[in-house]
Image (tube, rainbow, N blue to C red):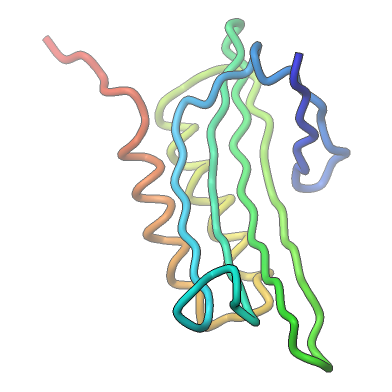
Length: 133
C-alpha cells in the first residue's frame, strides 16, 4: 500500500491510498538553468493532478516547487487542492482551472504564472473522453 498526503486549500490535508485513488488526469512541466539538470543551480516544477475514488469522490490538486542553490535565495513550495464529493465533468474542469489560478497567484516567481493556464488546459485534455451518441 502506497499512501500520499495531499494538501488542500482552506482545510487540513488528506491522506489516501494511491491504489484506491488512481490518477484520472494530469499535466506537468519543469525547467532548470544551465544545460544539465543535475548541475543546475535553480530548478522549477509545476504540476496538476486529478484523482478519483471508485465511489466518485474526486481530488484536484496542484503544486509548484522552486529549488535554488544560490546564496541569499531560498527554496519555495506552493500547494492547493479541492476535494469534490462526486464526479461531475463540468465541476472537475472548473476546479482544475480554479486550483491552477490559485497556485498562479501564490507562486514565488510570478514570471511563470501564465504557465498555469496551459497546465489547466493540458490536464483537462488528459481527462477521459466523453462518449457522445
